[in-house]
Image (cartoon, rainbow, N blue to C red; front, top):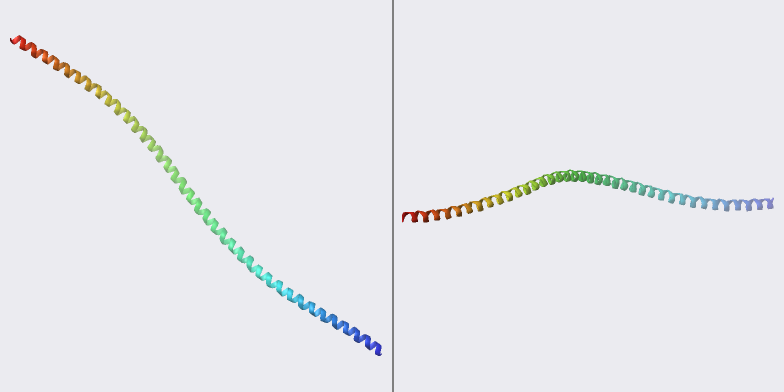
Length: 140
């Protein structure tokens, strides 16, 4: 009976050691679980914050794209208006060059007419002198 009791005590002692080790292991696992849950919560918060930040960045980029498209459209309209204005100015310039050429031609014609009139005047003056001389000669 004593040996049986000794065996039971020894077995009980072994079981108690196993219970203590199991309890320590459970406590360690519970601590690890708590730590892991806390890290998961932190990461989840970080992921949510990152997702929110990315949403804001995407929204900001969409706004920028919208503004850039509006600017591009405005610039295209301005470019088209400038091209039309440039066409008008070219026509005006071409007209001005044609007018200038016409004025040069008219001026050249006028100079030739002036020279012809000056020659006629000189001829008339010469004829007048001749006639005055002849009249003088005839009076004598």
